[in-house]
Image (cartoon, rainbow over all chains, first blue to last red):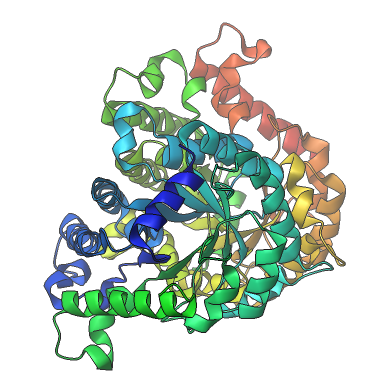
Length: 301
Length: 301
């Protein structure tokens, strides 16, 4: 079954479009995972503490959301030990029935892109498939021939990609608003085109786009520009976007987009409204609050 | 000592601007490393064969060139086992006195970019520094605030970055030629500006640019546009650019650029002119031929 259809099915089971981002900033981890930042511990111990935290988040997200999005950078921080934990966390999430969107933002020339696509979407061999991702994020700067190998892997492995179109950070305008049409509009048009060959029976493509929820007006415009493209919307919560900001990214019935929150869920225990709660209760409460808020904004309840 | 100055010193020792790219395509590895592509072998064995090959290339490049450029994708193909080999190869190259430019093409929003910068340029802690890179390649699509953390790590760790400006692949024009000025020109102007705070005593910056040697006219234009920026020129050899194509990327005296060749050196044994030679002799001969050809084109001999 195509990625687009698998995602659609998973979303209809949980009845909410929330995506939990696994961004284990070492300095923000709860005290019981402090080994992750302990200079005295071995790198392997530090990585394991970070991975343990992510597995706990996976367990509490399972059944509540359709997907998680591990952020590669925080695993790469621990080198080969972090890569081992990446595989453990991805496998754990897949076992728990979650779709895994690897936030790796890779991009390179053809033969190299092929190696990345194989690594993250197909796996080196059959044994490796326990920890390939269902989808990954990729960067379009290098052009169409750098995207093609990922599309081929999507077709072969029933996987998906989310191509960076308009990122959530403050200075994303620097190059993304360059030219006429604006660069991000041009990229959006190409994303729609690249995705046209990978449309599932649900009517959406397995080729998605990353559009920051921090740009609500552009979100509406980009939704119209890419009618069959599933969107991944970062920026909700810690980065400043609220539930009303994400509405424009959706198709009728609350379909066609995932809203990501990372720090807002993982480190909820640091927020004043969850003061005194165990980090896990705080994370659960924050995820529940996000779900309720977004369902309300989308008029799903 | 700033990265720019370290590189300049290393280049003046070897008297040539050749850069050996470590792109260990499993299907092209010589027969004695065939375990890398053997489905019957464990992933760890496969990764080790790939790493062994890279270490052999490192050893034969040491003393002949200033730097090597391992390509992350081919290591990531082997997951955590590949990450272990990445660290082994990087450490081996540094021990051999080579400068290591990690071809990772990372790029993400601020806090995530910081994790990548720490991982590849600073190291998690002091013990980790044996296998950090001297410089890495990064992708500019996300804008200035995604570049800033890398610049900070460059200052702190005496490291460098090479920002993608104009890539060597055929379809690089798709987005890189978008708008007026062309996007790659706009990126080049920003690279020059970002680098102005990290200029070494040699007069060049530690903030470099990737410009494909497959675009010779643009190379001359970009050299003028970024007068203090060290260039990394991929595309020579297997990708089609010859020695005359790279001349425009240089400052007088053959300074200010590195010319990369990966497959042309690593897999020289597959070329008709080296038929019958051991792969290592072929690689040595190809590197020697490249060095001679480029020194001649730059009128260094």
